Length: 477
Image (cartoon, rainbow, N blue to C red):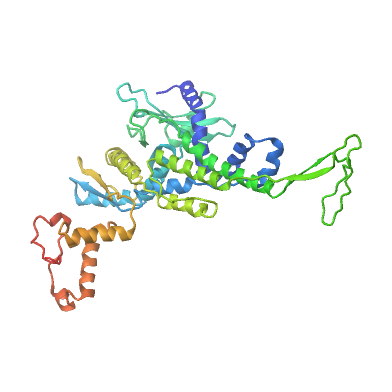
């Protein structure tokens, strides 16, 4: 187990990392203005900033980009127990309740901060899942063979009444509460009925989702933080420029009257400088800004950054001041996250496997033994495994294009009618697809209501196609 001194030193060494994650989370939560103001103030004079700060443009693209990337749990996720009994299916239903919502949040934080930490726990006799914010935990490994696998989890658990920082520290064998004075707080551990500091589960009660295959903690996403601040700063530049462009700068040459009033119907009597033979002159300077070129630069930088995230932005053609807003909207709304989602599915298949192994083999037996699960005494069948299947990730396409492609494949005889319906409705179950085909046949008159009522032969599913009869040309059997 880590000593109290090691815990404090480890957290201190990650201070800048935790601050970076906290800043990303704060901006993702909608607080961008303060960061834009700080960034803008560091690039211009104090006098200019006093004018421009009222026109800062806190346009926050981060939530929209992360939402676009976070999609794999917003389509149906199918879980089933392999090698179990009927009681295992009931337990699967118990633990699956609310899981998609929690894992979707985990996926959001993964896309934002490159890691995520999921903690299963019991609340009011039911299993729940807490997704720990990335500025509130530190992972550590002393495993020489697998250094990318955490052996210790440290949660930043707030402060005690004396203002000392508290840390909850887990290893597979121990649990301790340590404070910033490098003391083990057995008084607080007693509230968990665990003065001895034993981890009763025997494993880390967390699932750590990591985007890096080589590092325990991946490098922070400095690029995202930089671009999310840079774009509104550049837009703020244009706002400030437009303000000054509204006013011409007046100047005088060889005029000795300094008391010139700027107001409607004012008359200026100009006198030349008696010491020269030059005529008095008054002129103005009108500043100009090439808005179209600056907006184009902003769009190009946004598109290049999206490409580094594995996102193919939409093509918007020529961009100018008149279509900048719609262009930005189109880039984000129509960007293709296919490759990024494919990688996430691979990562979260492993995360789900780790989660269900943790639950079935460790957490559930412990909770049942302690009587913490309300009305539950059954255990998962030894050797049973929960298998997870995500919906097939498809490249970004319009509904019309998908319909045309499926229609051509069906007309060419490459797919069955049922496969065509399934491709157009990937969110439907086998039973829902069967019902949709039945309703289509009834509506088109292919089958009468009497024939439909008399039929007792169910339409075969995708898994049964090898044993089914040959389809006719119109897809019926």
